[in-house]
Length: 71
Image 1 (spheres, rainbow, N blue to C red):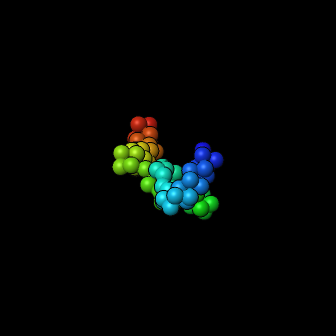
Image 2 (image 1 turned 120 degrees about the vertical axis):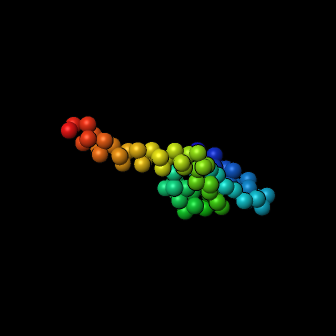
Image 3 (image 1 turned 90 degrees about the vertical axis):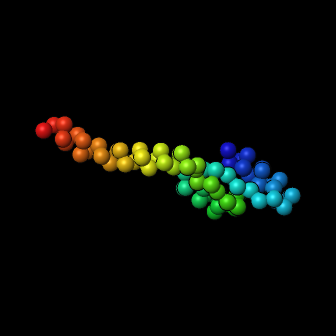
């Protein structure tokens, strides 16, 4: 994938166009920025971000729910 992004970066620079991507992984996006491969990143879309937050919230309740079911 990085090879494809690198190629697209060359083409966009040659034509004076900015390059951005969508990524749900900030660490991956940071690497692309650090390597100069992108100008901007959309870190997911609203449904993906909400799903992640709700998943983390539900997972955080797991220990409390487990403790209650054993009493």
